[in-house]
Image (cartoon, rainbow, N blue to C red):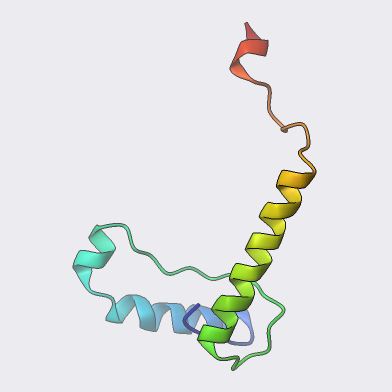
Length: 80
């Protein structure tokens, strides 16, 4: 994460600032910024927010591996 802000307008404004300062070669290579809703408080240190986000992601992945559910799509073999 690069910033934790309050509200959609603030997020969009920050996103524009980062995109405007981004090197065009990075953008051409596919690097993009995006807005993501979080429960963290506005002003949270970006490094701390990144660690929190990573821990949440790892927790979700671990749960998914422990409790595999039937996918919401049919496998290609079943459609034949």
